[in-house]
Length: 305
Image (cartoon, rainbow, N blue to C red; front, side):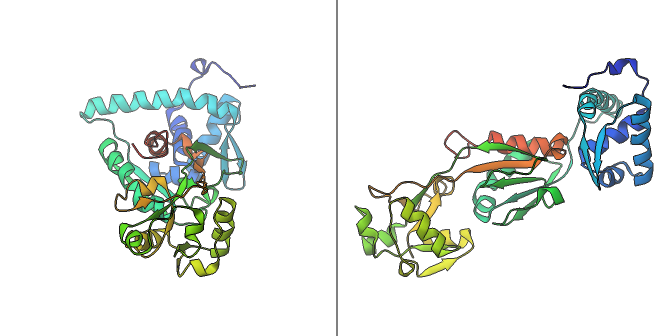
């Protein structure tokens, strides 16, 4: 059951309210103290004083981690309105427009970072030019709970209870080749035509062979003369005609110089995608803006609008 209180009947100390709001939006007491230019112990005392004044617990504290309680969530929507009203008054007095500023760290695979994020970031620059984005490029999972990133684009569903995730459209992976490769070796008409084809190997060949076998294609390690754990490198090798590549349609649709060559009997490989952030960080205005923009620019078929 959601805790509810008539907050309008409570007398607020604005410094305490501002400390609470900054802690939520920055994700931690240490980050909030830096944002407000206050000592962390002072900020912590202000949050504790607000809890005492209201007679409720606003944060669950586990070690150094802070998680909003239901009471904290209920209060947040009210004090955020107060904060926005105070900002509007200040901006009206100084003649400035409202801005959203600060750093957001996005974790994504090398292919996503190289081929997909630039279009999103171009739009972000238009909407919020004072947001600074740091891209954590890695094919490994970034640990959001350790603040290695604020937002992650993952291929697996997160299981951690303190993370929130949005399911993005799957991005089917197909077989692609450049015209130069097809001119030398011909276009495959059946899966058997691929028995002697050269493929560009991504990461572990044994895993690729297993996955491709599940989708109708039987290959051996001899089919992979070129290997790289870097997806961008693999894709460039495909574009230059050195072999057949397996790539999601997100990336391939941005590369008109390659052709889809799926023969009958080959089943596209579904690649799941999840947009993930920490539950506390999702309450930050700048992180929420970036999170929502990433979700907005993913079309129904997985291609960026």
